Each structure stands twice: as C-alpha cells, then as structure tokens.
Amino acid sequence: MREEGMGVMPGTLTVEESRQLMRVTQSLCRPAGARGLLADKALAEDLTCLFQADFIGSTRWSPDRRAFEDAYCVGRGDDMARQYVERFQFEDPISPKARHHREPCLIHAIVPRRDLERTRYYGEFLLPFKTVDGIDLYLYQGAHNVGDLRIWRAPGRKPLGEHEATLLELLQPYLLNAMLGFGELTLPGGDVDPAAAERCPWPCFAHAPVLGVRPANDAAEQLMGSLPQAGVDALTSRIDRVARAGRPSAWEEFTLCIARGGDSANTLVQLVPVLSATGAAHDLERAFGLTPREAQICLLLAAGRTDDQIAAALGISYWTVRTHLRRVFSKFDVTNRVELTRMLITLND
View 1 (cartoon, rainbow, N blue to C red):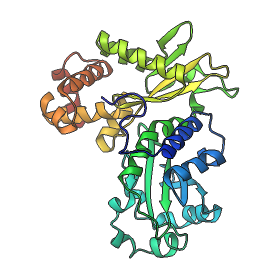
View 2: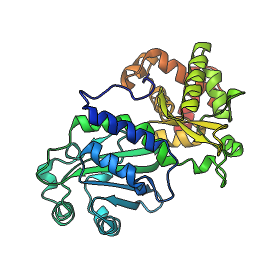
View 3: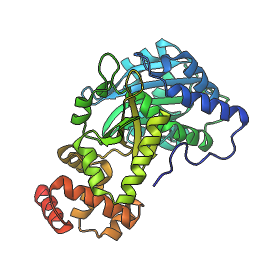
C-alpha cells in the first residue's frame, strides 16, 4: 500500500526545488482552464524551472483516431505542436511504446539514444526543434488516457534522470486530478453532480462538513462492503482528509481525485485506478466494472494460480489478493473462488 501525500522523497532536494515543487502542487489544485494545464502561464513556468526544462508539451491519445491530438507546447511554440500532430507522431518511435507505461519514462530507456539518432523523427523533428532528451508521463483513468506531460531538454544539457523521474512521480496524483478536470462529475455552473457520480464506474464518495463521508454510487458501496472495519475506517479517514485539504492522495491502487462544488461545501472524491488493464484484462474491466488490478487477478486465477502465486506474480501481499477477491466475488455475484474460477473459465471458452 502506498502512503498518503507526496510519498518517498527523491534523494536530496534543494531549497529552491522544494519551493518550486510546493508551488506546482498548489497550482495543480486550482481548477484547470479550458485550454489545459500548460495554458496556465505561471504553472508552465514553475514546471519549467522545477525540471530545468527547455520544452514542456502535452497531448491526449484518441482511441477512435488511433492518434495523439490536442498538442500544446511551452518553450517551442505552436509550430512544433502542429507538425507533431499532422506528421511526426506517425514517425515517432517513442510515444507508441511509452504510452503503455503508467509511470514516468525516460525516453532513452524506451528507445536507446543510438537507435533514436538514426531515425527521421530525430533528424527531421527533434534535432531541428532542439529537443533531444526527455521524460514522458502518460496519465490514465482506468483504461482511458486523459493526457500526458512531456519534459525535454536541448542538446548539450545534462540528461534527465531518476531524480527528475521521481519528482514527476510525486506530482502524478496532482497531474491526474488536474487533467481529469472532473467535467464528468460537475454541472455547467460548477456544482458537483450526484447523478453523474452514480453512473461513474469507479468508486465515488460524497463529502460534506456536516454529513461527513458517504458512498455516492454502487461501486463505492461494494468497495466498503468488501473491506474489514479497520479498512473502512482507514479509507473514510483518508477521504475526509483529502476532501478537507483539497489535495489528491493515493490509496492502494487508486488515486483519490477531487471534484469540488462552487462553494467548496460539497465535494466528490473519485477513486481512479492507477493501473490500466490491457487485452483480456481490459475486456473484463469494462464488462464487469473491475479495477485493472482485479482484472489481472482474475486472469491469473483462471490460469490456475493460487493466491500465494498471484501475490508473488503481482508483487503484492497475500492479504491484498484476498481483499481484491472479496470485491470481485461481489461484482460477479459469487461467494467463493471456485465459483469465480468456473465463471472465468466459461467466459474464456
């Protein structure tokens, strides 16, 4: 289980980095403008300073078009964004691979520098725009890409490394919360929409100063019903702190994201899966409202793995596997792993 808030600090931060990191998180907690995060000049400048970047960009993956769109550039201008969308994304050897990751990706770990320098993408796009070394982060709401952040440096600069990757990982909950924008959970006037929360596939909780925390949809009811009392108390306390502070946080495989009403008195907290399932796991996720982790566990269960083997394969504890399985039993309307396995095998036939 990951800890609340900023998590593990990356090595040693300078005083100025600490200040910049705080400014960025505070900016990300403000409502995003219609043109996206990087249209906020102050935020873009703070990100540029924090990462000592020469270029920061963002796009969004469109599954319908099978292409990146809505490109935005800071430090290189609109022409770079236009050229990328219209032509060079289709020659890009990095992004099609990196977008399947759920953590910051140093681009030369995706495509070795020597191989990249042999491509037209490098010679005709990256090098002319003086962006040759970078780190990319793709942000997901379940299986749905909500945007990305691309941070690059010019030739001759110190390469980006693990220090910057960890800084970006610390910002990930804030970036996800800001990029979601929560248009799906808010009304045109800015108030939260309880009806939209009820339709949401992920657990949503309502928070009000007097009423406290309460489930706002069936997914939240099922989640609470699957937890032991200590787990219910811990999650309720976490949601209460997140709602009062107005800052996203993390709990197990979820990011706790926030949608506030116009007067901030009423708040919705949505538990967005950090992972994103693919292939058969994605099909299960969509058909039965599973989280990506639950879908992964189902596939391993159908393959005959024991709970201990599943825990080892996914790098989680035995008891975490059991907690996930209790939630899955409820979603499949079964009472034990034998019934669940039988159903999963039938679905696979």
